Length: 72
Image (cartoon, rainbow, N blue to C red):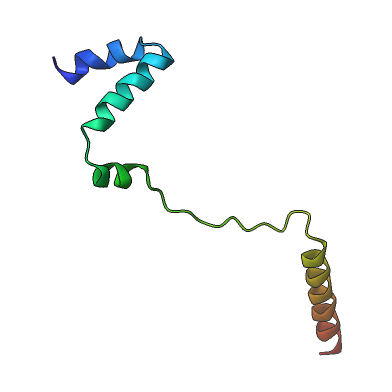
């Protein structure tokens, strides 16, 4: 059966049947290939949200820059 015919059938499956199908298909895929599919690079998320220390440092830098500009 062509994949184009399978896709609508799979979409009509219940969530539990889709999970069972997924597990069945995953058993046929070597672990190394599964690692490539499911391993995504992780990137740290840096945020200054709710960071009073960062706000203080930035405020001080702005004030220093203004003072340096005023004296130049």
